[in-house]
Length: 163
Image 1 (spheres, one colour):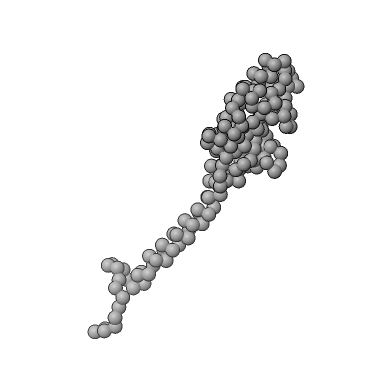
Image 2 (cartoon, rainbow, N blue to C red):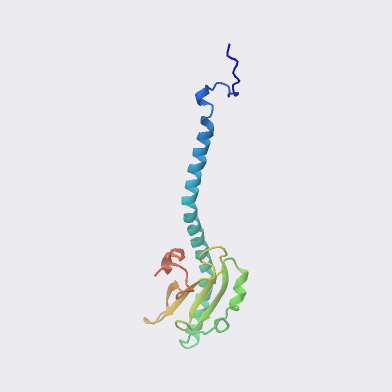
């Protein structure tokens, strides 16, 4: 009779199989960790892009107000939010993802600029602009990031705003 002390085994396991489940779990945890490391940056980029797109919705109201001012004031552009009948720039801070929205004269009069409020993202405090032009007699709006260093990176801007 063998009097050696033996470690308890799981029911139905042979001696060779007893430690296999720990190794198996370590491999699974490693694989899941690698997948998370790969997927996380892609998700952050996607989430940031969707928040930037949502913030751009506020530019639609401003675009309408600026266009209306232009046509009713002898083809002159508003130079600030008050002229265009919009709230003060900082009043937009109450909305999700928007720090301020303002009508400016830079780079051209009538430009609508939005500053993003996206903490803990690369797009926080960055700007997008809608720049008007009237070369054809009607207003054509061009969306683009503000000039560096204030502009949103292309990868976070909506497709129609990338340069």
